[in-house]
Image (cartoon, rainbow, N blue to C red; front, side):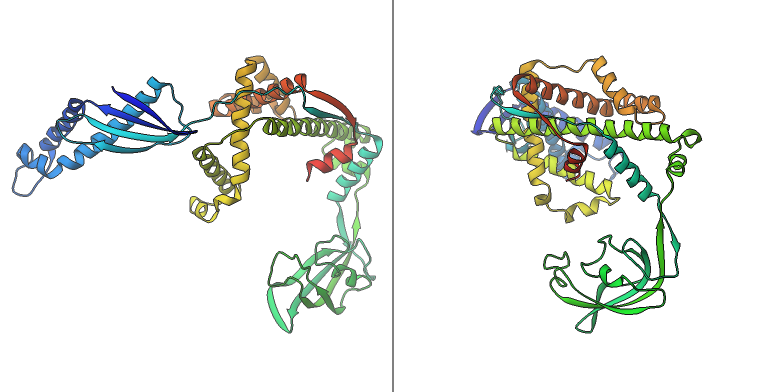
Length: 432
């Protein structure tokens, strides 16, 4: 097999490959003979169609089919022979295709860049530390109680923190607008769920009251046709409800703590908070390391690799939100391009660090990662087995282990500065 390689740009290669004539011609002849034994044509009995007739009728299509398969086969043989790894699918085009002569085709494709792992000793990484204090625990318990609050009707005027059950119908310049109407809508006063100013005007209302609530949509409102406009909502109050929080003992029972033991509940909640804090601190450091790696490495990213990542992200979004494949066309590439480029770039850089540092994920590393991930579930063994029974899922765990080894490697080389923070601050940053 004759192969020539041309570098057409920094990341583009063009292979010119020759296929011996006899290979294509013999396979095409073989398929035409098989076709002649089975083809049905008017004027001929089955299996009695002359070969010349079959070749004249089907020769071009059969040769095209054979050539397509052989070009694919020879392309893969060529990249193995030349030790080239394509970054995406090739554009294959026959250049010379005449019966009785060697076939010649070209394959043009992108390759991954050669990346040299850079020195990270001058990089500064902040290593944050934090603790779960009593105040943090009490705030979390209050949050959990709020999440399990119930409402009971009261015969009085509404105040901040109450819930009102209302009908409303909004108009702008006397005209109704889309999304401006609801019935039996439950609204907590002070929650900020409605347009600024709406909830404040319901303070001191009571069941049976009717009120015109006048507000102005913010200039940056998501519905541009409403932004900056004044609206009047005719509002009817049906109920005023007050919030009732469960007692701490009731919360313990709701959380499934045995015998509703309050101290045990606090221990469990604090343990969960500490686990979340540990993960958040780890993520904070990892994010800094990944940003530092990107800044330290100049990488030309193959467009085909970015396109492939965009396609994967599209499919992930569609799957996550229960859509179908037809929705993909409505999700423009620009939605994903920046993140996809970062992902591909990071993947290439991480790969270079793994190679240069000779990092490996052994069975013990993978098992430790699995056990840590599974520990938050009621049946950890089932979770571990779920990952182990599928190679692709297990490969994801291996990648996580390797990424952490890359982080540890950078931390070992970089200047690490300890910095104290609080549980609240680090968790708020996680939510941003």
